[in-house]
Image (cartoon, rainbow, N blue to C red; front, side, top):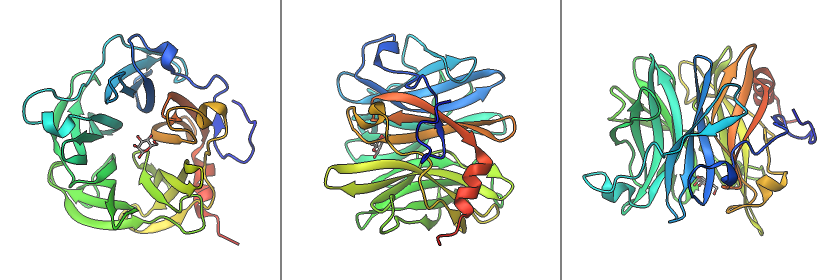
Length: 311
Ligand code: BMA
């Protein structure tokens, strides 16, 4: 692992980016914001690909070690071209986030269409065949992540509706994964900090000994445009609307050329992570909306960052 920037809590893999345009088996514009799942010894990464036409769809990459991936030759999920989903997905499907619950895999993703941005949910057994279950948010919502277990008998998710031009992280609950409600705000952008402009959930919540660990993205607006960084918040296990702690500093900030330069520069944007061994995390992230990277670290170090007090 490369430890060139001691300021970042997570370490970049030395051969980042792990998937870039040259690694794609078909013509496309960019590949970024991938969501991982480890099934047995195999790592699968569901990729957001932007086609040359300008809209996004999903492809799949496989790996035996979590670092060296091979992308399958055909996309696995395309925006619907006909039927009831077509107008909802006419501008693409984006930013998948995979959660396993009781051996079933659910993907929350952003659909972009004639009516704007919404969160949708699909289920899959193999990351290749997807069954659309429904649109699960109102308009102007994205960054949906599903908790990996029910909380007080209900499914739970975090998301990012835009209200009053403010992008905060909210929680909602559901009895059946399709009908959602009981919504509450969890965290808001922090004036003065690196996440002062907008925030959104990134990685599906990770259960830890201290509560739910949510790795999120935070945006600061500058005269040069937005800067997307990665942060973390710790939520109460029984009532995740309660915040136990929130990292004062980012876990990862755009510093490398591949994070600074691309279709959208100054972006690190995670959509998932794999936890293994003794609390080791592999966090997968899109760099500059142009390539896929991985960073590693210890869950315990992220928890410590969440619990640090501002002095
Ligand atoms: C967010 C999402 C991400 C993207 C990021 C930076 O709003 O649309 O898909 O990576 O902006 O452009």
